[in-house]
Image: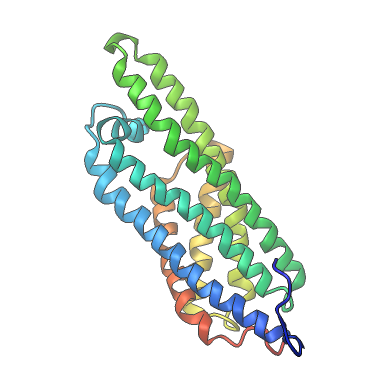
Length: 245
């Protein structure tokens, strides 16, 4: 956290610092909503139509990374940005809520570190998937089994990083929704954030425990969070958060 702002007459009141964090939170929420929206739209409009259908569904991204690498990379860039966006949001929320709910704010700040795990997974997805796709296409048809097995192991690693990071990060977002319920954010924003993060936690926990990947649940959760982040961006500037807390 940056050092307190000092005026010629001495340190400015804490309220000024809170207002600055609220402005940052509003803008960062809007950026994160755009990152999520871009990821959802690009995956549906660029990645899914680019699949050749020559491989089973579990190899969808390998297929697209080989047939349309530029589309795949562009889409996954938004995945990388989305993880950074969530980390920044949790850090900002934890700082803003420190006076109102210090223990819960500490967990929210700590949960922002978990997004680094998902960020690393997204970077692996961005760099390693196209490389394996190129290797797969360059290998004779009869010898491609090793490339498919390598991708399966890579996908398992990416899913574990996404699930581990997502479980903790979504817990932080759920806590934000609880702490700010009807006191900082409108109820409808809290509902969107709570439902979206709850679905994210359920999806991540199920994948970690059983290995079952509920893709549609993740898509629905991401859509709810996108609307929640947009609502946060619109609501936070009018909030009286903690100024008297």
